[in-house]
Image 1: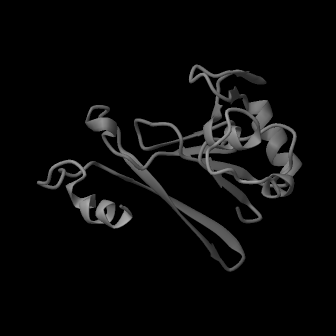
Image 2: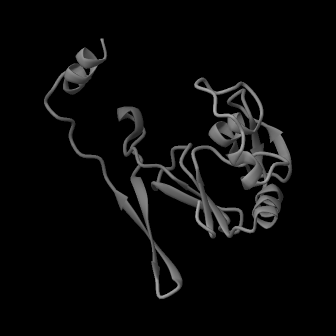
Image 3: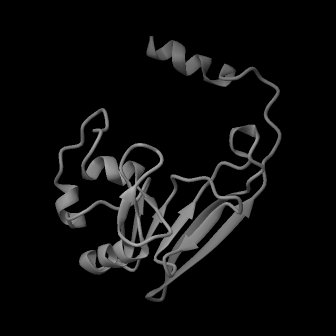
Length: 155
């Protein structure tokens, strides 16, 4: 996070400020509930409030929750990555929440684009560019073959 943007895997959590969140103990295995779970697995939704998630963990949060979170933490937006988007990214909740998904053709079947954001400061002005890209062919190797050296070193 800079003074402008929070970048997180999933989404927002309830009640705690970002400074309070930073002080939480970071367990090796993510918990099944609470703010760390929510930072990993919450998703923006189409309805206001906090609602049950079809994923079975954390929640969906509405535009009102996103605005309240940004106001409480004095930030301008949230960037997250936890959901596949057909165009590689999606801006919602009055552009306070952007999902950026960098895996094109997810699971070799979704036909989605991938995307990433280039964020820079120039002359005290924040600039960002969203770059979209298509999938490329897989290398001619068996799945995980390229990782065999790494795996042997771990054993």
